[in-house]
Length: 264
Ligand SMILES: Nc1ncnc2c1ncn2[C@@H]1O[C@H](COP(=O)(O)OP(=O)(O)OP(=O)(O)O)[C@@H](O)[C@H]1O
Image (cartoon, rainbow, N blue to C red; front, side, top):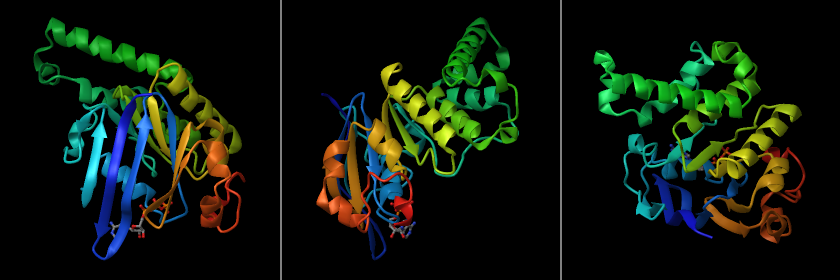
């Protein structure tokens, strides 16, 4: 299989703290890849380096064969990387449709943004953006709330809108940071189904940080486990479940146990 994202010997130091220590792994095109580990393991720091929010101390990040290690964060969407955040990042007073249209901005050319003139090409581009947004709304089954301000929706639906906004940037690689934390069982199952559909119907590669071991072992193709900034395991869900280092990292709790690992 082709590698979409390759992380090599990545190190991140914050003063005297080494948050990520020499970590390497591939994310294969078309797979669901999970990054797991106890609190403070370095997962968010890894995500922030990959999405270029944080500069790396050393190492390289390659996306689709292109070295993006020193790419500016605002260029990442145009390079094909979308992201959701641990803390909900939506415009609460804006409607679902408008939140998704914001995601289209990375696709708008300057002539479209300079739409003061509203020429025919501007109108055609605007129609295309709206059409794509409607397709995403259908995909995520949020037609019934399309005109509702996002802040008025249940938490699970707000997360779905955030996912939609990331999808509107047309990512090849979608980074999902703890999508299901704070969700009830039904919302978690819905999100798991949407993530599988992203992979199977839209052929998007998904990389997620997740504490919910149920969803991780149910839908991941490969998993990397970090602990104290180091990579301690890489493999399929079956290999990870049986890995002694992983079991020890979770203080004796088998990682296959649903939830609660975060508190371990
Ligand atoms: N900006 C920062 N300055 C100093 N230290 C930091 C900074 N960000 C993270 N760290 C430290 O780096 C380590 C890794 O933190 P990180 O947030 O990446 O872990 P995590 O695996 O995402 O944890 P969690 O599951 O709790 O979100 C921790 O020791 C943390 O205190």
